[in-house]
Structure formats: structure tokens, C-alpha cells
Image (tube, rainbow, N blue to C red; front, side):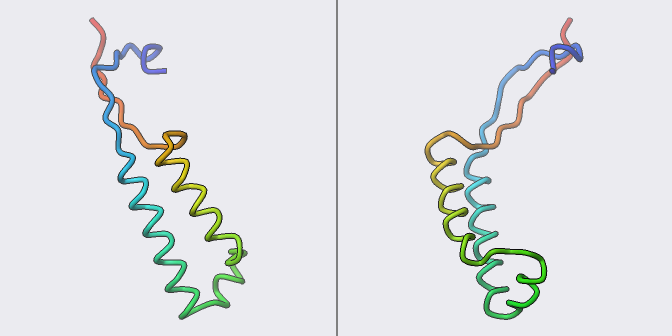
Length: 78
């Protein structure tokens, strides 16, 4: 995609730790809302019983290298 736009990738920065922090934040927010506003979660269609397994699967995918976040650094090709 970048090459089609006339760019070449110089390097790629991995930011998998940011992905893990995001999963932790989602878990913390769900736990807070579970205690303070459970009806809002239910109204929004959040399945509180499925959330822990989904978050654990996401963590496993990130630590196993299946899921991640990367930032390609590119420059205009000459």
C-alpha cells in the first residue's frame, strides 16, 4: 500500500506493549463500570460474562505475536 503511494518503508516500530496497556485499561474500565453502572453496560450490550475470556484471549494473542500494533516509518521513494 505504501509502495503504491510512492513511499518506501524505512523501518517499522513495534508497539505491542501499548496494545497490552490498552487491554489492561479496558479491563479496569469494565471492572469499574461493573461496580458502579452495571445497567449501563447491559444497555450497551456488553456481555460481562464473556469479557474476561475475550480480554485473556487478546492478551494471549499479543504476547504470542499473533496480534500487535506497529508503526511503519516511510519516506518518499526517489
